[in-house]
Amino acid sequence: MGDVAGIGPEIVARACVSANVARECRPVVVGDATILERSLRLIGSTLRVQSIDSAEAPEHIGDGAVQCWNPLDETQAAEARAVPLGKLDARAGRAAYEWLVAAARAALACSVDAIVTAPLNKGALHLAGLDHPGHTEILAACCGAAQHAMMLFVPPGEIVHSAGGLGVAHVTLHTSIASVPGLLSADGVFAKIRLLEGFLRQMGVERPRVGVCALNPHAGESGLFGDEEQRIIAPAVARALARGVAVEGPVPADALMRRALGGEFDGVVAMYHDQGHIPIKLVARDTAVNITLGLPIVRTSPSHGTAFDIAGQGKASADGMIEAIRVAVALARRRSPVSQIAEDPRAS
Image 1 (cartoon, rainbow, N blue to C red):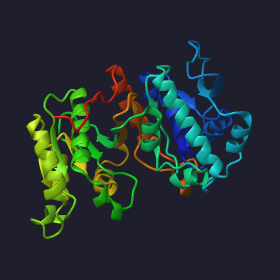
Image 2 (image 1 turned 180 degrees about the vertical axis):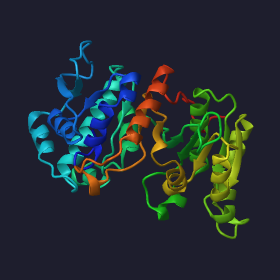
Image 3 (image 1 turned 60 degrees about the vertical axis):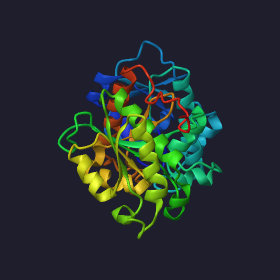
Image 4 (image 1 turned 60 degrees about the horizontal axis):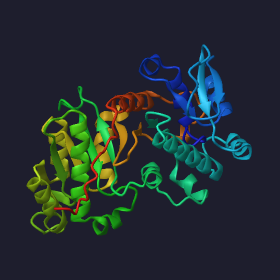
Protein backbone atom coordinates (compact mmCIF):
# COMPACT_ATOMS: atom_id res chain seq x y z
CA MET A 1 0.00 0.00 0.00
CA GLY A 2 2.98 2.33 0.42
CA ASP A 3 2.84 5.62 2.30
CA VAL A 4 -0.79 6.20 3.29
CA ALA A 5 -0.33 9.99 3.30
CA GLY A 6 0.18 9.84 -0.47
CA ILE A 7 -1.63 8.38 -3.46
CA GLY A 8 -0.59 4.77 -2.78
CA PRO A 9 -3.93 3.60 -1.34
CA GLU A 10 -5.85 5.25 -4.17
CA ILE A 11 -3.83 3.72 -7.01
CA VAL A 12 -3.98 0.33 -5.25
CA ALA A 13 -7.77 0.66 -5.08
CA ARG A 14 -7.98 1.64 -8.75
CA ALA A 15 -5.82 -1.35 -9.70
CA CYS A 16 -8.06 -3.66 -7.69
CA VAL A 17 -11.13 -2.63 -9.69
CA SER A 18 -9.31 -2.81 -13.02
CA ALA A 19 -10.56 -5.46 -15.41
CA ASN A 20 -7.03 -5.68 -16.85
CA VAL A 21 -5.67 -6.67 -13.43
CA ALA A 22 -8.48 -9.16 -12.84
CA ARG A 23 -7.57 -10.92 -16.09
CA GLU A 24 -3.89 -11.14 -15.12
CA CYS A 25 -3.76 -12.23 -11.47
CA ARG A 26 -5.41 -12.48 -8.08
CA PRO A 27 -4.21 -9.47 -6.06
CA VAL A 28 -3.75 -9.49 -2.30
CA VAL A 29 -3.35 -6.01 -0.82
CA VAL A 30 -0.78 -5.76 1.97
CA GLY A 31 -2.04 -2.83 3.98
CA ASP A 32 -4.95 -1.70 6.12
CA ALA A 33 -8.50 -2.77 5.24
CA THR A 34 -10.10 0.43 6.55
CA ILE A 35 -7.77 2.62 4.50
CA LEU A 36 -8.40 0.46 1.44
CA GLU A 37 -12.17 0.78 1.96
CA ARG A 38 -11.85 4.57 2.19
CA SER A 39 -9.93 4.60 -1.08
CA LEU A 40 -12.48 2.39 -2.83
CA ARG A 41 -15.28 4.73 -1.76
CA LEU A 42 -13.16 7.70 -2.90
CA ILE A 43 -13.08 6.34 -6.45
CA GLY A 44 -16.77 5.40 -6.37
CA SER A 45 -16.30 1.64 -6.14
CA THR A 46 -18.63 -0.70 -4.27
CA LEU A 47 -15.98 -3.42 -4.11
CA ARG A 48 -15.93 -5.10 -0.69
CA VAL A 49 -12.72 -5.67 1.30
CA GLN A 50 -12.17 -9.17 2.68
CA SER A 51 -9.61 -9.24 5.50
CA ILE A 52 -7.33 -12.28 5.58
CA ASP A 53 -4.82 -13.48 8.18
CA SER A 54 -1.86 -14.19 5.92
CA ALA A 55 -0.60 -13.71 2.39
CA GLU A 56 -1.67 -17.27 1.60
CA ALA A 57 -5.08 -16.20 0.41
CA PRO A 58 -7.96 -18.69 0.65
CA GLU A 59 -9.21 -20.20 -2.57
CA HIS A 60 -12.69 -18.68 -2.19
CA ILE A 61 -13.05 -14.97 -2.74
CA GLY A 62 -16.43 -13.41 -2.13
CA ASP A 63 -18.14 -11.86 -5.14
CA GLY A 64 -17.12 -8.25 -5.57
CA ALA A 65 -14.40 -8.51 -2.93
CA VAL A 66 -10.67 -7.80 -2.73
CA GLN A 67 -8.44 -9.48 -0.17
CA CYS A 68 -6.40 -7.42 2.27
CA TRP A 69 -3.74 -8.63 4.71
CA ASN A 70 -2.51 -6.36 7.49
CA PRO A 71 0.50 -7.79 9.37
CA LEU A 72 0.58 -4.79 11.76
CA ASP A 73 -0.68 -5.13 15.30
CA GLU A 74 -3.83 -3.18 16.18
CA THR A 75 -1.94 -0.28 17.75
CA GLN A 76 0.22 0.21 14.65
CA ALA A 77 -2.80 -0.22 12.38
CA ALA A 78 -4.73 2.46 14.29
CA GLU A 79 -1.76 4.81 14.01
CA ALA A 80 -1.64 4.30 10.24
CA ARG A 81 -5.36 5.07 9.95
CA ALA A 82 -4.85 8.37 11.81
CA VAL A 83 -2.20 9.69 9.38
CA PRO A 84 -3.33 12.95 7.70
CA LEU A 85 -3.13 13.14 3.93
CA GLY A 86 -0.37 15.01 2.18
CA LYS A 87 2.03 15.37 5.12
CA LEU A 88 5.22 13.66 6.22
CA ASP A 89 4.43 11.35 9.11
CA ALA A 90 6.59 8.83 10.95
CA ARG A 91 3.57 6.53 11.41
CA ALA A 92 3.12 6.33 7.64
CA GLY A 93 6.82 5.61 7.18
CA ARG A 94 6.75 2.81 9.73
CA ALA A 95 3.61 1.21 8.28
CA ALA A 96 4.96 1.37 4.71
CA TYR A 97 8.18 -0.29 5.86
CA GLU A 98 6.43 -3.08 7.78
CA TRP A 99 4.06 -3.82 4.89
CA LEU A 100 6.96 -3.93 2.45
CA VAL A 101 9.03 -6.31 4.59
CA ALA A 102 6.01 -8.55 5.21
CA ALA A 103 5.31 -8.72 1.47
CA ALA A 104 8.95 -9.54 0.70
CA ARG A 105 8.98 -12.31 3.29
CA ALA A 106 5.77 -13.73 1.83
CA ALA A 107 7.43 -13.79 -1.60
CA LEU A 108 10.55 -15.43 -0.17
CA ALA A 109 8.30 -18.09 1.38
CA CYS A 110 6.59 -18.57 -2.02
CA SER A 111 3.22 -17.58 -0.53
CA VAL A 112 2.89 -15.06 -3.36
CA ASP A 113 4.38 -15.05 -6.85
CA ALA A 114 5.49 -11.41 -6.94
CA ILE A 115 5.19 -8.12 -5.10
CA VAL A 116 4.21 -4.74 -6.57
CA THR A 117 4.91 -1.77 -4.35
CA ALA A 118 3.10 1.56 -4.10
CA PRO A 119 5.32 4.61 -3.46
CA LEU A 120 6.84 5.31 -0.07
CA ASN A 121 8.41 8.53 1.16
CA LYS A 122 12.07 8.63 2.15
CA GLY A 123 11.44 11.49 4.57
CA ALA A 124 8.75 9.52 6.38
CA LEU A 125 11.10 6.54 6.67
CA HIS A 126 13.70 8.83 8.23
CA LEU A 127 11.16 10.25 10.71
CA ALA A 128 10.34 6.67 11.72
CA GLY A 129 14.01 6.04 12.52
CA LEU A 130 14.55 3.77 9.52
CA ASP A 131 17.95 4.24 7.91
CA HIS A 132 17.02 3.17 4.38
CA PRO A 133 16.94 5.44 1.31
CA GLY A 134 14.09 3.55 -0.37
CA HIS A 135 12.46 0.35 -1.58
CA THR A 136 15.52 -1.04 -3.36
CA GLU A 137 17.79 -0.88 -0.34
CA ILE A 138 15.14 -2.27 2.04
CA LEU A 139 14.43 -5.21 -0.25
CA ALA A 140 18.12 -5.92 -0.79
CA ALA A 141 18.65 -6.07 2.97
CA CYS A 142 15.56 -8.19 3.51
CA CYS A 143 16.59 -10.66 0.80
CA GLY A 144 20.31 -10.66 1.59
CA ALA A 145 21.14 -9.52 -1.96
CA ALA A 146 24.79 -8.46 -2.18
CA GLN A 147 24.47 -7.31 -5.80
CA HIS A 148 21.32 -5.46 -6.74
CA ALA A 149 20.19 -2.59 -8.93
CA MET A 150 17.19 -0.41 -9.64
CA MET A 151 16.09 -0.69 -13.24
CA LEU A 152 13.48 1.30 -15.12
CA PHE A 153 11.93 -0.88 -17.81
CA VAL A 154 9.92 0.37 -20.77
CA PRO A 155 8.02 -2.32 -22.69
CA PRO A 156 8.36 -2.39 -26.49
CA GLY A 157 6.01 -0.13 -28.39
CA GLU A 158 5.79 3.34 -29.85
CA ILE A 159 8.33 4.76 -27.36
CA VAL A 160 10.95 2.00 -27.45
CA HIS A 161 11.78 0.28 -30.72
CA SER A 162 13.87 -2.68 -29.52
CA ALA A 163 11.87 -5.92 -29.62
CA GLY A 164 12.31 -6.74 -25.94
CA GLY A 165 11.80 -3.24 -24.56
CA LEU A 166 14.47 -1.14 -22.85
CA GLY A 167 15.92 -1.60 -19.36
CA VAL A 168 17.94 1.15 -17.66
CA ALA A 169 19.89 0.01 -14.60
CA HIS A 170 21.69 2.34 -12.20
CA VAL A 171 25.15 1.91 -10.68
CA THR A 172 24.48 4.35 -7.82
CA LEU A 173 21.01 5.26 -6.61
CA HIS A 174 19.69 7.31 -3.71
CA THR A 175 22.72 9.43 -2.96
CA SER A 176 23.95 12.97 -3.54
CA ILE A 177 25.45 13.95 -6.88
CA ALA A 178 28.61 15.02 -5.04
CA SER A 179 29.10 11.48 -3.71
CA VAL A 180 28.66 9.66 -7.04
CA PRO A 181 32.28 9.75 -8.35
CA GLY A 182 33.62 8.32 -5.11
CA LEU A 183 31.04 5.53 -5.11
CA LEU A 184 31.84 4.31 -8.61
CA SER A 185 34.14 1.33 -9.09
CA ALA A 186 34.99 -0.96 -11.98
CA ASP A 187 33.60 -3.90 -9.98
CA GLY A 188 30.34 -2.04 -9.41
CA VAL A 189 29.88 -1.04 -13.05
CA PHE A 190 30.72 -4.56 -14.21
CA ALA A 191 28.23 -6.08 -11.76
CA LYS A 192 25.42 -3.86 -13.06
CA ILE A 193 26.26 -4.79 -16.67
CA ARG A 194 25.95 -8.47 -15.76
CA LEU A 195 22.74 -8.02 -13.79
CA LEU A 196 21.15 -6.12 -16.66
CA GLU A 197 22.30 -8.61 -19.29
CA GLY A 198 20.97 -11.49 -17.18
CA PHE A 199 17.56 -9.85 -16.88
CA LEU A 200 17.35 -9.18 -20.60
CA ARG A 201 18.26 -12.78 -21.41
CA GLN A 202 15.57 -13.95 -19.04
CA MET A 203 13.09 -11.74 -20.87
CA GLY A 204 13.90 -13.64 -24.06
CA VAL A 205 16.53 -11.38 -25.66
CA GLU A 206 19.05 -13.88 -27.06
CA ARG A 207 22.03 -11.54 -27.27
CA PRO A 208 21.28 -8.36 -25.35
CA ARG A 209 22.95 -5.18 -26.54
CA VAL A 210 24.02 -3.08 -23.57
CA GLY A 211 25.18 0.54 -23.64
CA VAL A 212 27.09 2.04 -20.71
CA CYS A 213 26.79 5.75 -19.96
CA ALA A 214 29.76 7.98 -19.36
CA LEU A 215 29.71 9.94 -16.10
CA ASN A 216 30.98 13.25 -17.46
CA PRO A 217 29.90 15.41 -20.43
CA HIS A 218 31.38 14.23 -23.73
CA ALA A 219 32.62 11.09 -21.92
CA GLY A 220 35.22 13.22 -20.17
CA GLU A 221 36.68 14.59 -23.43
CA SER A 222 39.88 12.53 -23.07
CA GLY A 223 40.28 13.52 -19.44
CA LEU A 224 39.59 17.24 -19.78
CA PHE A 225 36.26 16.97 -17.94
CA GLY A 226 37.12 14.08 -15.62
CA ASP A 227 38.91 10.75 -15.80
CA GLU A 228 36.28 8.36 -14.40
CA GLU A 229 35.61 7.06 -17.91
CA GLN A 230 39.25 6.02 -18.37
CA ARG A 231 39.89 4.79 -14.81
CA ILE A 232 36.62 3.07 -13.94
CA ILE A 233 34.02 2.69 -16.68
CA ALA A 234 36.15 1.61 -19.66
CA PRO A 235 37.90 -1.20 -17.71
CA ALA A 236 34.50 -2.53 -16.58
CA VAL A 237 33.23 -2.50 -20.16
CA ALA A 238 36.39 -4.26 -21.38
CA ARG A 239 35.90 -6.93 -18.74
CA ALA A 240 32.31 -7.51 -19.85
CA LEU A 241 33.38 -7.68 -23.49
CA ALA A 242 35.95 -10.33 -22.58
CA ARG A 243 33.11 -12.41 -21.13
CA GLY A 244 31.06 -12.26 -24.28
CA VAL A 245 28.67 -9.42 -23.41
CA ALA A 246 27.61 -7.27 -26.37
CA VAL A 247 28.40 -4.01 -24.63
CA GLU A 248 29.50 -0.55 -25.75
CA GLY A 249 30.78 2.33 -23.65
CA PRO A 250 31.41 4.64 -22.06
CA VAL A 251 29.14 6.68 -24.35
CA PRO A 252 27.98 10.25 -23.55
CA ALA A 253 24.63 9.83 -21.83
CA ASP A 254 22.68 12.20 -24.09
CA ALA A 255 23.76 10.36 -27.25
CA LEU A 256 23.36 6.91 -25.69
CA MET A 257 19.80 7.48 -24.50
CA ARG A 258 18.73 8.70 -27.92
CA ARG A 259 20.30 5.67 -29.60
CA ALA A 260 18.73 3.30 -27.05
CA LEU A 261 15.24 4.70 -27.52
CA GLY A 262 15.76 4.32 -31.24
CA GLY A 263 16.32 0.59 -30.84
CA GLU A 264 20.12 0.26 -30.95
CA PHE A 265 20.32 -1.13 -27.40
CA ASP A 266 18.21 -3.42 -25.23
CA GLY A 267 19.69 -2.10 -21.99
CA VAL A 268 21.54 0.91 -20.62
CA VAL A 269 23.70 1.19 -17.50
CA ALA A 270 23.44 4.69 -16.00
CA MET A 271 25.94 5.97 -13.46
CA TYR A 272 23.46 7.74 -11.18
CA HIS A 273 19.77 8.18 -10.44
CA ASP A 274 18.81 11.20 -12.55
CA GLN A 275 21.00 10.20 -15.49
CA GLY A 276 18.72 7.22 -16.03
CA HIS A 277 15.46 8.53 -14.62
CA ILE A 278 15.06 11.89 -16.36
CA PRO A 279 15.13 10.71 -20.00
CA ILE A 280 13.03 7.62 -19.33
CA LYS A 281 10.37 9.43 -17.31
CA LEU A 282 10.30 12.23 -19.86
CA VAL A 283 9.47 9.97 -22.79
CA ALA A 284 7.78 6.97 -21.15
CA ARG A 285 5.83 8.57 -18.30
CA ASP A 286 3.57 5.98 -16.66
CA THR A 287 4.63 3.13 -18.93
CA ALA A 288 8.04 2.95 -17.20
CA VAL A 289 8.15 0.25 -14.54
CA ASN A 290 10.67 0.04 -11.70
CA ILE A 291 12.15 -3.48 -11.32
CA THR A 292 14.69 -4.49 -8.69
CA LEU A 293 17.45 -6.66 -10.15
CA GLY A 294 19.47 -9.08 -8.05
CA LEU A 295 16.65 -10.25 -5.75
CA PRO A 296 15.47 -13.87 -5.38
CA ILE A 297 11.90 -12.54 -5.74
CA VAL A 298 9.98 -10.57 -8.37
CA ARG A 299 9.42 -6.94 -7.41
CA THR A 300 8.06 -4.12 -9.55
CA SER A 301 6.54 -0.72 -8.91
CA PRO A 302 5.29 2.32 -10.79
CA SER A 303 8.02 4.86 -11.46
CA HIS A 304 6.33 7.85 -9.77
CA GLY A 305 6.35 9.04 -6.17
CA THR A 306 3.84 9.64 -3.38
CA ALA A 307 2.32 12.81 -4.94
CA PHE A 308 1.30 14.36 -1.61
CA ASP A 309 -0.15 17.35 -3.47
CA ILE A 310 -3.06 15.32 -4.93
CA ALA A 311 -3.50 12.72 -2.17
CA GLY A 312 -7.14 12.02 -1.33
CA GLN A 313 -8.51 14.06 -4.22
CA GLY A 314 -9.64 11.10 -6.32
CA LYS A 315 -7.63 12.10 -9.37
CA ALA A 316 -4.50 9.97 -9.14
CA SER A 317 -3.82 7.83 -12.22
CA ALA A 318 -3.28 4.11 -11.68
CA ASP A 319 -1.81 3.54 -15.14
CA GLY A 320 1.70 3.09 -13.72
CA MET A 321 0.52 0.69 -11.03
CA ILE A 322 -1.45 -1.39 -13.52
CA GLU A 323 1.55 -1.56 -15.87
CA ALA A 324 3.77 -2.59 -12.93
CA ILE A 325 1.34 -5.40 -12.11
CA ARG A 326 1.30 -6.53 -15.73
CA VAL A 327 5.11 -6.69 -15.84
CA ALA A 328 5.25 -8.50 -12.48
CA VAL A 329 2.86 -11.14 -13.78
CA ALA A 330 4.96 -11.59 -16.92
CA LEU A 331 8.10 -12.06 -14.83
CA ALA A 332 6.41 -14.44 -12.40
CA ARG A 333 5.12 -16.58 -15.25
CA ARG A 334 8.70 -17.27 -16.25
CA ARG A 335 8.95 -19.10 -12.90
CA SER A 336 12.36 -17.76 -11.94
CA PRO A 337 13.57 -14.63 -10.14
CA VAL A 338 14.46 -11.57 -12.20
CA SER A 339 18.13 -12.25 -11.51
CA GLN A 340 19.90 -15.55 -11.16
CA ILE A 341 23.39 -14.02 -11.52
CA ALA A 342 25.12 -15.63 -8.56
CA GLU A 343 28.62 -15.17 -9.95
CA ASP A 344 30.92 -12.92 -7.97
CA PRO A 345 31.59 -9.95 -10.31
CA ARG A 346 35.24 -10.05 -9.24
CA ALA A 347 35.64 -13.65 -10.40
CA SER A 348 37.65 -14.40 -13.50
